[in-house]
Image 1 (cartoon, chains in turn yellow, cyan):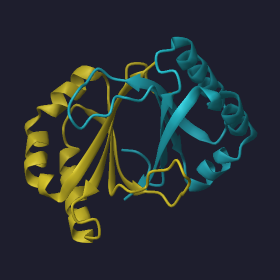
Image 2 (cartoon, each protein chain N blue to C red; image 1 turned 120 degrees about the horizontal axis):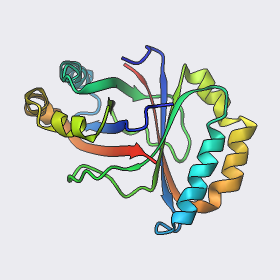
Image 3 (cartoon, rainbow over the protein chains, first blue to last red; image 1 turned 90 degrees about the horizontal axis):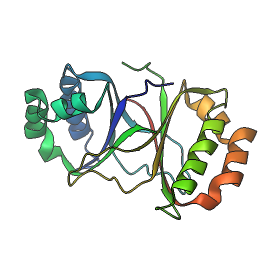
Image 4 (tube, one colour; image 1 turned 30 degrees about the vertical axis):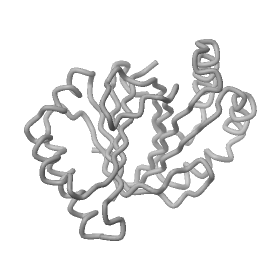
Length: 105
Length: 105
């Protein structure tokens, strides 16, 4: 079980050029650099699994799952210079981003 | 860092009666029972955080994040009797479910 106060920040990216492996790899490289932000407790960079059912959205290119110890750490990440540089360097790669922020119930 | 082969199954539920705390609690209780499926490595039950930006979708009621050691364990979970009973018992509570299945890159 995850810790009680954990803050889950799950981002899904859709690429501007969805067939470009080069663009996908550039985004992954950018996320790897981004993972150095010190308030990040744990992270996962992924792609859609091969599962397929009506309810499954596998149209995204990259999943970026972040765990923070609490909301303050997530707030700090949003304004971290490493994060701002990532957005600046990589925003030309995507045309859609959906974020789900979740706290425990 | 998560283990290399980890399989991430993230489900977002929208309730049929989004203002019903009773329905939300029933779904949470159902998920707690569902968490007993033995192939589940780790799980988190949550609600939207208080963050608010254009890219954030906070319209869902419940987030159900599951970690499996691998795809086989996730496949097994899908047909586990405990999972089938959860769907049978709780499906009247939601009107929309979106699932993102992710593997590492």
